[in-house]
Amino acid sequence: MDLLSRTAMELNFANNFETYLFPVLADHYLKDGDLERARKVCAIGLEYHPENSDGLFVLGQASQSAGDLQQAEQLFKSVLKNGTVHLQAATRLAEIQLELQRTETTVMKTWHQVIKWDPGNHVAREWLDSHEVKKTLPKIEQKKSKKTFPQKQNDSVEISPRLATFTMVTVLRNQGLHHQALTVLDILEKKGSDKKRIKSEKQEIIKMLEE
Image (cartoon, rainbow, N blue to C red; front, side):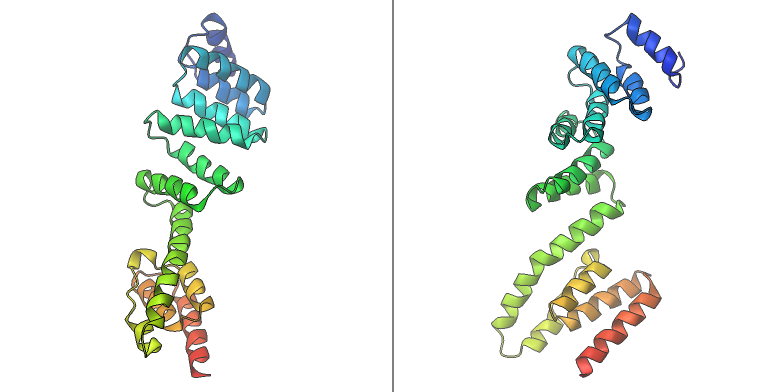
Protein backbone atom coordinates (compact mmCIF):
# COMPACT_ATOMS: atom_id res chain seq x y z
CA MET A 1 0.00 0.00 0.00
CA ASP A 2 1.34 3.40 -1.01
CA LEU A 3 0.96 5.63 2.06
CA LEU A 4 2.07 8.64 0.02
CA SER A 5 -0.87 8.22 -2.35
CA ARG A 6 -4.03 10.01 -1.26
CA THR A 7 -6.09 7.90 -3.65
CA ALA A 8 -4.71 4.64 -2.23
CA MET A 9 -5.49 5.78 1.30
CA GLU A 10 -9.00 6.85 0.33
CA LEU A 11 -9.68 3.38 -1.09
CA ASN A 12 -8.25 1.74 2.03
CA PHE A 13 -10.41 3.86 4.32
CA ALA A 14 -13.55 3.40 2.22
CA ASN A 15 -13.16 -0.38 2.47
CA ASN A 16 -12.34 -0.40 6.16
CA PHE A 17 -13.39 2.40 8.51
CA GLU A 18 -11.67 0.54 11.35
CA THR A 19 -8.21 0.88 9.82
CA TYR A 20 -5.48 2.21 12.09
CA LEU A 21 -4.18 4.17 9.09
CA PHE A 22 -6.99 6.74 9.15
CA PRO A 23 -4.61 9.50 10.42
CA VAL A 24 -2.56 9.13 7.21
CA LEU A 25 -5.58 9.92 5.04
CA ALA A 26 -6.63 12.74 7.36
CA ASP A 27 -3.14 14.20 7.10
CA HIS A 28 -3.38 14.12 3.29
CA TYR A 29 -6.57 16.16 3.47
CA LEU A 30 -5.02 18.52 6.02
CA LYS A 31 -2.01 19.21 3.81
CA ASP A 32 -4.34 19.85 0.87
CA GLY A 33 -6.27 22.39 2.93
CA ASP A 34 -9.43 20.28 3.09
CA LEU A 35 -10.10 20.76 6.81
CA GLU A 36 -13.67 19.47 6.68
CA ARG A 37 -12.67 16.07 5.26
CA ALA A 38 -9.66 15.83 7.57
CA ARG A 39 -11.87 16.36 10.62
CA LYS A 40 -14.53 13.96 9.31
CA VAL A 41 -12.02 11.13 8.72
CA CYS A 42 -10.57 11.67 12.19
CA ALA A 43 -14.01 11.69 13.78
CA ILE A 44 -14.87 8.35 12.15
CA GLY A 45 -11.51 6.76 12.92
CA LEU A 46 -11.54 7.91 16.54
CA GLU A 47 -14.93 6.24 17.07
CA TYR A 48 -13.11 2.93 16.60
CA HIS A 49 -9.80 3.99 18.13
CA PRO A 50 -10.54 6.80 20.63
CA GLU A 51 -7.00 6.89 22.05
CA ASN A 52 -5.14 6.90 18.74
CA SER A 53 -2.55 9.63 19.37
CA ASP A 54 -1.89 10.37 15.69
CA GLY A 55 -5.59 10.71 14.97
CA LEU A 56 -6.05 13.06 17.93
CA PHE A 57 -3.04 15.09 16.83
CA VAL A 58 -4.21 15.52 13.22
CA LEU A 59 -7.67 16.47 14.45
CA GLY A 60 -6.04 18.99 16.80
CA GLN A 61 -4.10 20.46 13.88
CA ALA A 62 -7.28 20.74 11.82
CA SER A 63 -9.09 22.46 14.69
CA GLN A 64 -6.17 24.86 15.15
CA SER A 65 -6.16 25.69 11.43
CA ALA A 66 -9.91 26.30 11.62
CA GLY A 67 -9.38 28.76 14.48
CA ASP A 68 -10.93 26.57 17.16
CA LEU A 69 -8.06 26.92 19.61
CA GLN A 70 -9.90 25.68 22.69
CA GLN A 71 -10.83 22.41 21.00
CA ALA A 72 -7.28 22.08 19.64
CA GLU A 73 -5.93 22.61 23.15
CA GLN A 74 -8.08 19.80 24.53
CA LEU A 75 -7.12 17.45 21.70
CA PHE A 76 -3.38 18.03 22.17
CA LYS A 77 -3.86 17.46 25.90
CA SER A 78 -5.57 14.16 25.07
CA VAL A 79 -2.56 13.10 23.02
CA LEU A 80 -0.26 13.68 25.98
CA LYS A 81 -2.64 12.07 28.49
CA ASN A 82 -2.29 8.78 26.64
CA GLY A 83 1.30 8.59 27.85
CA THR A 84 2.61 8.92 24.31
CA VAL A 85 5.89 10.77 23.74
CA HIS A 86 4.62 13.29 21.21
CA LEU A 87 6.89 16.33 20.93
CA GLN A 88 4.83 18.05 18.24
CA ALA A 89 1.66 17.86 20.33
CA ALA A 90 3.44 19.28 23.38
CA THR A 91 4.96 22.13 21.35
CA ARG A 92 1.68 23.07 19.72
CA LEU A 93 -0.10 22.86 23.08
CA ALA A 94 2.35 25.35 24.61
CA GLU A 95 1.93 27.74 21.67
CA ILE A 96 -1.87 27.59 21.92
CA GLN A 97 -1.80 28.07 25.69
CA LEU A 98 0.24 31.23 25.18
CA GLU A 99 -2.24 32.47 22.59
CA LEU A 100 -5.16 31.68 24.92
CA GLN A 101 -3.29 33.45 27.74
CA ARG A 102 -3.30 30.49 30.11
CA THR A 103 -1.57 30.92 33.47
CA GLU A 104 2.21 31.09 33.54
CA THR A 105 2.30 27.92 35.66
CA THR A 106 0.27 26.02 33.05
CA VAL A 107 2.43 27.13 30.14
CA MET A 108 5.64 26.49 32.08
CA LYS A 109 4.56 22.91 32.79
CA THR A 110 4.02 22.27 29.08
CA TRP A 111 7.34 23.83 28.04
CA HIS A 112 9.12 21.71 30.67
CA GLN A 113 7.57 18.64 29.03
CA VAL A 114 8.95 19.81 25.67
CA ILE A 115 12.43 20.27 27.19
CA LYS A 116 12.23 16.80 28.73
CA TRP A 117 11.79 15.27 25.28
CA ASP A 118 13.89 17.79 23.37
CA PRO A 119 16.59 19.37 25.60
CA GLY A 120 17.89 21.44 22.70
CA ASN A 121 14.57 23.13 21.91
CA HIS A 122 15.55 26.81 21.69
CA VAL A 123 12.00 28.22 21.83
CA ALA A 124 11.15 26.35 25.01
CA ARG A 125 14.51 27.09 26.62
CA GLU A 126 14.33 30.82 25.86
CA TRP A 127 10.80 31.12 27.26
CA LEU A 128 11.62 29.17 30.42
CA ASP A 129 14.87 31.05 31.03
CA SER A 130 13.24 34.46 30.69
CA HIS A 131 10.41 33.56 33.07
CA GLU A 132 12.69 31.92 35.61
CA VAL A 133 14.74 35.13 35.66
CA LYS A 134 11.63 37.13 36.50
CA LYS A 135 10.98 34.83 39.44
CA THR A 136 14.52 35.15 40.81
CA LEU A 137 14.73 38.95 40.60
CA PRO A 138 12.37 39.70 43.53
CA LYS A 139 14.50 37.41 45.72
CA ILE A 140 17.63 39.30 44.74
CA GLU A 141 15.99 42.64 45.58
CA GLN A 142 14.72 41.29 48.88
CA LYS A 143 18.18 40.09 49.93
CA LYS A 144 19.69 43.42 48.90
CA SER A 145 17.34 45.42 51.13
CA LYS A 146 18.49 43.52 54.22
CA LYS A 147 22.13 44.51 53.74
CA THR A 148 23.86 47.74 54.70
CA PHE A 149 25.98 47.56 51.58
CA PRO A 150 23.65 46.56 48.71
CA GLN A 151 26.35 46.81 46.04
CA LYS A 152 28.45 44.12 47.72
CA GLN A 153 25.39 41.90 47.98
CA ASN A 154 24.76 42.40 44.25
CA ASP A 155 28.29 41.22 43.48
CA SER A 156 27.85 38.04 45.53
CA VAL A 157 24.67 36.81 43.83
CA GLU A 158 25.32 33.52 42.06
CA ILE A 159 24.01 33.11 38.52
CA SER A 160 23.28 29.63 37.25
CA PRO A 161 25.00 29.02 33.86
CA ARG A 162 21.80 27.32 32.69
CA LEU A 163 19.92 30.61 33.05
CA ALA A 164 22.57 32.69 31.26
CA THR A 165 20.99 34.20 28.14
CA PHE A 166 20.98 37.60 26.47
CA THR A 167 17.36 37.87 27.58
CA MET A 168 18.54 37.59 31.17
CA VAL A 169 21.13 40.33 30.55
CA THR A 170 18.39 42.65 29.30
CA VAL A 171 16.14 41.92 32.27
CA LEU A 172 18.95 42.52 34.76
CA ARG A 173 19.93 45.78 33.08
CA ASN A 174 16.35 46.99 33.16
CA GLN A 175 16.29 46.23 36.90
CA GLY A 176 19.48 48.25 37.41
CA LEU A 177 21.45 45.11 38.34
CA HIS A 178 24.45 45.93 36.16
CA HIS A 179 27.02 43.81 38.00
CA GLN A 180 24.87 40.70 37.66
CA ALA A 181 24.43 41.52 33.98
CA LEU A 182 28.22 41.60 33.58
CA THR A 183 28.45 38.23 35.34
CA VAL A 184 25.95 36.73 32.90
CA LEU A 185 27.92 38.15 29.96
CA ASP A 186 31.08 36.51 31.34
CA ILE A 187 29.24 33.17 31.46
CA LEU A 188 27.97 33.65 27.90
CA GLU A 189 31.52 34.43 26.77
CA LYS A 190 32.77 31.16 28.27
CA LYS A 191 29.91 29.33 26.51
CA GLY A 192 31.11 30.74 23.17
CA SER A 193 28.13 33.01 22.51
CA ASP A 194 28.14 36.03 20.17
CA LYS A 195 31.44 37.73 21.09
CA LYS A 196 30.64 40.94 19.24
CA ARG A 197 27.36 41.39 21.05
CA ILE A 198 28.96 40.50 24.40
CA LYS A 199 31.66 43.15 23.91
CA SER A 200 29.07 45.77 22.96
CA GLU A 201 26.85 44.94 25.95
CA LYS A 202 29.80 45.10 28.34
CA GLN A 203 30.93 48.47 27.02
CA GLU A 204 27.45 49.94 27.48
CA ILE A 205 27.12 48.61 31.04
CA ILE A 206 30.60 49.80 32.06
CA LYS A 207 29.81 53.23 30.64
CA MET A 208 26.62 53.38 32.73
CA LEU A 209 28.53 52.38 35.88
CA GLU A 210 31.10 55.12 35.33
CA GLU A 211 28.47 57.86 35.01
